[in-house]
Length: 205
Image 1 (tube, rainbow, N blue to C red):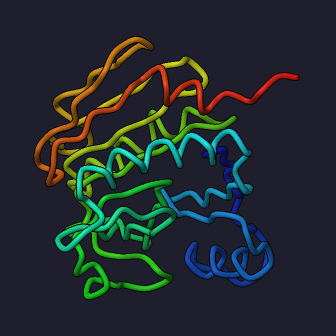
Image 2 (cartoon, helix red, strand yellow; image 1 turned 180 degrees about the horizontal axis):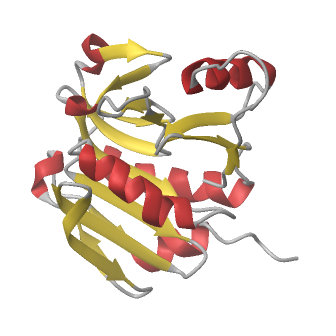
């Protein structure tokens, strides 16, 4: 997801990051607002190719039965990050969550990290955030599996075994490979890297 950091105002009465983020949400409906690493990130609506890639990605998860009784496959559901000095939250493009995630609501349509089995991001212009900042955020939240569709470099990243602020296992896959995700998400899911990356490329007339 493409994102732009927002600077905090320096004049007047100090405001919390959370208060500023809520104000941005009210003023910019349709934009994705996150607080990660003590910084507010604002992302515009995704382009068509981004949305097409997400649709392709949802199919194998649903076909594997991950959108049934025990789990749900969801888009744009917020993940409340472990408490820091300031409240923080991320909004992954796609996630596999326990079906009782409604019981784990914190605030601002964000849910406790414990109910997330997998999060997935499809990169846009500001691709570094998904490959650097969010890696630390999701690892610290102990999300078991983090997948990134890197449209910039045409690669698929699969990260597992969160330890501290990083993932102990990080594998990068190229077009032509078929990737099987860890069974910990609840079912056997395989991803065709070439198919997914092609879906994420804008069509040229």
